[in-house]
Length: 140
Image (cartoon, rainbow, N blue to C red; front, side):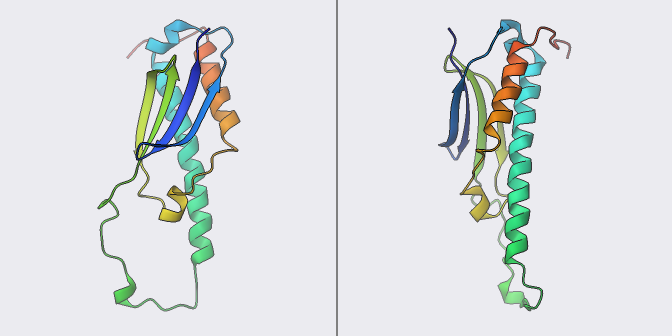
């Protein structure tokens, strides 16, 4: 019995880790393009979730009557201290797909309080479907 899992980290710290089963696991998927497409789709789901939360946070902080002075504008680069998100799909603790993306495009409050509980079933279902499919893409 193989052990399947996905892990989401920020700066090496685990945000979310879930184990799951895959019916009719197809070993050929691990060496196909489909596993990378799957990881990319999962990361897009997470990024869309973070973007929505960033928009909500920024909108709640917006004050249409406030006047911004030039001294209030933060002119430091957002990439001075970069926060890196890592997404991994593992089988028996071996990484079969990984994807890395920056978190600096999201406000600090959003990237340090990531909550993807509502996405977990979608992510697991997508990975299960990919690892269980019979027709795979092997052409580059």
